[in-house]
Each structure stands twice: as C-alpha cells, then as structure tokens.
Length: 382
Image 1 (cartoon, one colour):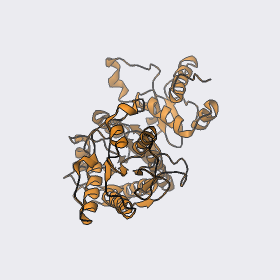
Image 2 (image 1 turned 90 degrees about the vertical axis):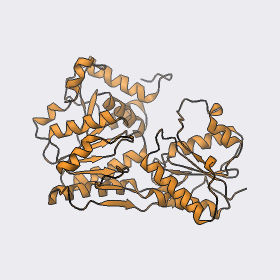
Image 3 (image 1 turned 45 degrees about the vertical axis):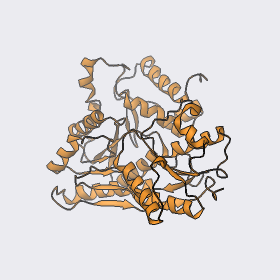
Image 4 (image 1 turned 135 degrees about the vertical axis):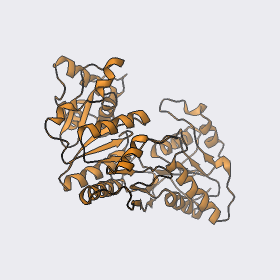
C-alpha cells in the first residue's frame, strides 16, 4: 500500500483520487472515513487530516463534520472554463435542506493541532445546540476566502465562523456582511479599525508570560521569531507584548532579536538558512517562537550546531504542535486554550443568531487568558 519515496499524505490523496475514478464514484458519494484511512495506511489522524485538507483545497472533496467526506468532482484538474461551476461544489446538499441550522466555518488550513482543537471546540458547541457545520479552507488566499463566503451565502447558512486570511487589504465580503447585519464571528485575527465580534487568545499577555519566565531564569538575550510572510495583527500584538515586557524590566530593545518575515520550509537545508547561523553563533540564549513548528525547527538547528536544549539555549513556543495528546510534550509553551476559543466563538455566534443580529450594536471582543506551561525546553541561562 505504501510507496516509501512518496509522502504519506500524498499516498492517501492519490489513493482517494484513484478510488473515485476506478469505482465510478459521483458527486456526493461518500469516501472512506478518517478511521478507515488511518487503519488502511497505518498512519496518525493528523496525516489523514492533512491529506483530506489538501483534497478540499483543490476541490476534489467536501467535508461535512459529523457526516463524512464526499466527492466534489472527479476531474482532478478542472479547466478555467469549469472553475465557475466549481464555486457551487455543494449543490447536492441543498436538496436535503442542509442550510437550515447550518453554520459555515472558514479556516486557512487544518494542518496542525491548533486548528484541529479549534475546530473540535466549535463543533462541540454547535452539536450541543443542534447545529451542523460545513468547512471550507481558504489556503491562506484572500480570493478563496471570498469564494467560500459567497458559497456559504448561496447555500443559505445561518452564520459564519471565520479564521480570516492575513492580508494587507480587507476582504470586502466580510465588510459587506458587517454592514448587512449577517451574523459572523472572527477567530484569532481581527480587522484593524473595523468593529466585529472577535475572539482570540491574548497574544500580548502570552509573550509577556514567556519573557517574564525567561527573565527569572537569568536570560537577557531573548529573541522572538515569526516565519509569517506578513506582519499580521496577531504577530504584531505578540511582538508588542514582548517589547512591553522588556521595557517593564528596564531592558533595551535589541532590533536584531526581533526575527520576522522569513521563510522556513520543511525541505530547506537548515545549515544554509540565516536563522541557523544566528542560532549557531549564540546571538540569543532564549527564543520565543510564534508557532510550534518554528520552535521544533530551532530545536533541530541547535542540535545540528552542537548545542543542547535547554543547557545552551531555551525555547518557548506558541501553538504547541508537538503535543498529540494534552500534556504530552517536551516544549515549554504558551497554552492558548484553542478548544475554549472555538467553543466560545460558536456560542457567541449562536447567541447572535438567536437574539437577532444588530450590526450597529455593541460588538464583543473576547480575549482568552493564556497560561505558560513549563516543560523540558527551558532552563537557567548558562
């Protein structure tokens, strides 16, 4: 079943595409479940979720939480003339009246446990109130986010939960919903200067907790790292918290310790990356990374440079992506309570739907208080 030269997620994707064609499956037919795919390929849930997310992104399948995954189209690569019809990939659900008590969820990806726990919280709250959900992935692209909103409007969902794309320009579809009074809640990111219902973890407090703890351990050269291609609202808030924490201690801000706007892909040669030289030369004794994957990359770089964690350098991450099970992780991290964020976001949306949305009323901005969880990647400054 496995080709060792091909990534597991791609093997699963190719298997599903071949199954659709060889079995003569049609639009709306159900494909194997996550559990069946996990057993068939002997892989973890995250590998299966990644594979299915990729098929959703390209339009091959649609996912309906609680019901399964369904064929969207058979042709893997539609022509430009066919793309307009692809904007209506869920027509087969309309005849079932799925728009009633249905909430649309728009996420950039579901490639890590932060996103999965966020979705679990949303789906639990919706299920508790007798609602169903339908997920569309934007892939981090503004145009695809707009298309997803239009699609959900066409289906007739009652409200939207949106993890918005990071872009320098606003999504006018979101602005249109605001002014028309259509109920929606933004998650993790907000639109600066535009009042909407919004819920996230308190990023400023998160980095303050990290800096305070590292300072107590004797660290004075503390770097903060983000591999986001844009200086997003979320990134900026966390950097603000980092700078404020250092200022409160009377420390000078070293611009060289604010490491942002770089790319670090899985297949990159670590030892040729500028960040590797930074780590190897011990420019900082501690690192705060704004996502879990980046923390894992820095850990690998330290090992390649002959450094030990936490003896030679300490690492604190956000979005601890290494923890498959709650509490099973080596990384000291800022716990953001993603499940609670998702649960509260869904309940806020349902409250808006139940009471009648008032676009000129008072909007809710909810910040969940994070906690610092200490594990094995932090220690006293040597």
